[in-house]
Amino acid sequence: MGINYSKIKTSNLSIDSLLRLDSKFHLDFNDSGWDIFKTSSSNLVKLKDYIEPFYEKFNYEEDVEYFGIPTGRDYLNDFGQIISHQLVTKDDHPGRLKYSADENCILISSLKGAVTPALNFDFNLSKYVFSNGFYIFKPKGKNNKKFILYLLRSIRIKYLIDNVIYRGIGISSYREDDLLNIQIPYIDSEKQNSIVKKIEPLENEIIELINSKKSEIDIINEAFSNEFNFDFEVFNKLKSEKIVSSSLLNFSNNIDCRFGYRFQHKSGKYMMDFLKSKTQKRIKDYVAIPITLGKSVSPSQYDEEGEYYYISMATVKKFYFDKEDAKKVSDEYSNQNLNKAVKKNDIIMTRSGMAIGKFALIKKNIKGIYADFTMRIRLENYNHQLAYYYFRSVFFQQLITTNKKGLQNHNIFPSMIQEFPIPDWSIEKQNEICDSITKQIDKQRDIDKIIEQKQNEINRIIENAIESE
Image 1 (cartoon, rainbow, N blue to C red):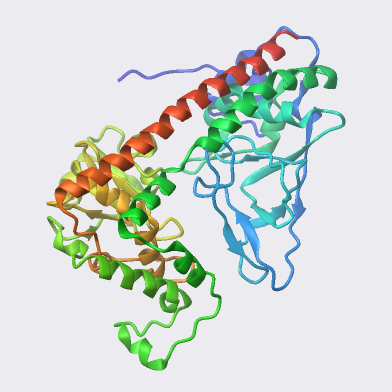
Image 2 (image 1 turned 120 degrees about the vertical axis):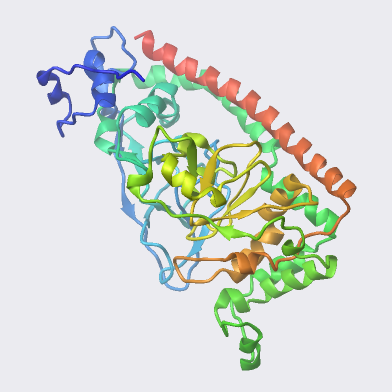
């Protein structure tokens, strides 16, 4: 394996106020400095001449529910739309949910590799509270907010964030100052407005396409609810109830005498009773081998020359195994833990923390050891893809929500999961439902490809405008 060397002049270290030595930073900036578009313009300005930071602490009031927006893909999609939120109050909110924003704000994740683009919302945000994982800006002077929004979404700035200015290992982030130091040619507000006019027809087409899309989870939920003839109106009404009452006798109905709000809530019992009325089967009736937790690893056991990937919670956060996010482990470690290896059609579930209940289907044979904060479900005589869809559905997720233990660091265990109901349809019916779901999901991906083409057109408009200066 060859080794790549890079030579950095001592004088070039002054490019960075922190005197960073990492090659990924200096190799990109050696020739261009902060002029990432490498233009011939003599009139360069920094991004901080276009935008300024805006951090206003959110004012929580007593007895009011607010919509908390963290940075993760559970809350924002690839198009920058809010798809979910955490209900939070003054007394019950994570400390990271701390900033307010309005329609003039532009938000961008501070994390390397964030799936969401720069964000702007055109509706009332007074009840929305945003995570400190966002950098929040407002346009300076007469600068066009939409022009800046698409500038921050440009491929070159995205590349810079994900490959050059990020710092740290694992969940890496980048400094706000580094972003604001990026240089581009000066473009006056009149030209910005004309650029936006070219973009707006494409933007409208994208919005139309996005509105025609259905999310994977909506497709999955609709398919199972149709088969079950499930009444969401009744279920949602139960979920909205804020007060839970129960007799002392009910506490003895579980081995731990649990009296937590989630466990005793009517919506959980309703879902469990409903599923039991639809099937006599439990997951344990279809397992090929017992469901087990994975194996922990120490830093010294990672080895990029190893054959096996380490399948951690981070590697399945996108609902499939992403080897780009996976590290490899030493041959010694993997040889000692082959009983924790995965094979094709295994389903990996995250079983701890705020990300509890994520699932990934291993679609081909890979060499991988699954982590201690995940569990492996290996089924037989069941359509593996359909089981994966079912586990992601609101029906199964409600069972997890009801039965998980703990306050902040939630946990759930194989002994609990194996007792959950699973539809006992014939293999023919399983295949039919699975094919229907998969076809609908594939249609959405075709729409995504068209959207991507139009987004690339917008990017070319932005880049051409910058390069023509």
